[in-house]
Length: 154
Image (cartoon, rainbow, N blue to C red; front, top):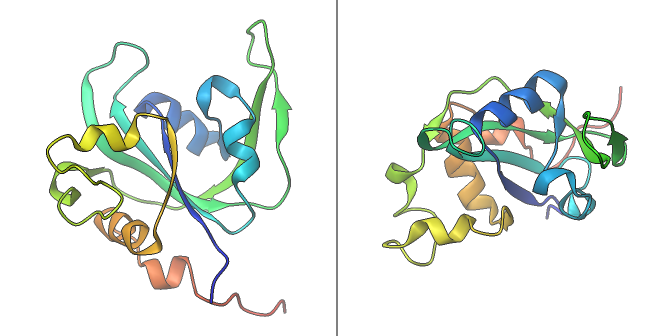
């Protein structure tokens, strides 16, 4: 039995790309709260409602996927007035996957008609079966990327 959790962060595509390039997750405008719930080895995917924040074009796709890396939350300066918090993520090469074809199969989306409400809080934990569906839609082999038991260190 796995103790791994699976998370989705709601973040614009341009910010997701910056996270992939820098190997980090930054959520809720840099707040630490969501990152504190994540643990090393957890699965993490970005859902991007828009191409850019705040006024980019609608996108509605999963745009990045990876595993939470070792280490805790770190503070980073981004040029703003307050510090932002980040957590290291090992992102996997993946293609963007539109959410609409997945809505009917994703169990965490309770209202299939108003599916966007599932993402309204900006960060959510999802069942493994849903994360596996998202990973497959992004071109990843879930069983290989997120094995049930971790191999022993060499």
